[in-house]
Length: 303
Ligand SMILES: [Zn+2]
Image 1 (tube, rainbow, N blue to C red):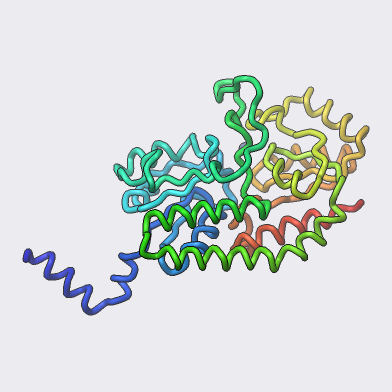
Image 2 (image 1 turned 135 degrees about the vertical axis):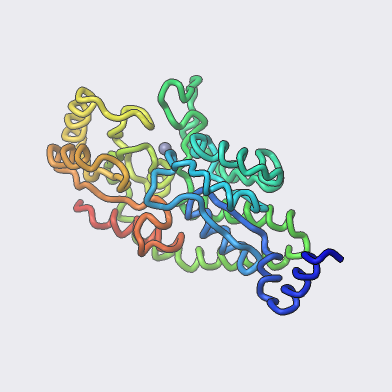
């Protein structure tokens, strides 16, 4: 036995926790909500780290070389898909030199394959045209129906990767499902008065939530997803919002607040700051916190 192996055996003998840690699936997620769902499903059998934070625009995360360190040892990468992370994840995965997580490998989980994708373009759209949703709308993780589908998809892949822990992952998913069912009556009661509310959103990132809550999306501040508004577009938007009596302008914190405030003040719509990911605010630590905070902010809109 080589000296290094002896050392490892000795360490393993005296630090049992570290052995358990080595047994865990190393999971890296692109956004914090996926990290929370992975932890719920994986429990003590996984160790999970997100690459970005909920206060960042997930389309534009800086591909810092330090992010490849976690990817190098990852067993699994869980991503949103639909090109949301195309500007930063592929280069990091490539540079990680980790065969387990390359596209199409069992360690690559594209969660968009678990849900019904909305806003799929009917004509050919490329990123060269500026639209950053060329394969459909990637902002799908908030409605409970999708969170459950994502959690189920993650659980199934964990079971495939660790067949010995199938029952464990199954039980963890069942626990998540029962937590969602316990919360559903409260969320449904909060959602009911929101139905029919006319909204404008800064980025086209609330489509799935609007469908869940029956909000009526009148228009968007961005001309197309990723294309900032021109003065002409803003003039038309203000006129439309006045004519349609739009109640609220929804915006994540990382967009241009000056423009949104100007539009809101000219139209009488309420500017509603909307968290779209776990970690958007320090107090939003879980998926449940995220949905609670989002519904609370929508409930604050006068109608
Ligand atoms: Zn987007």
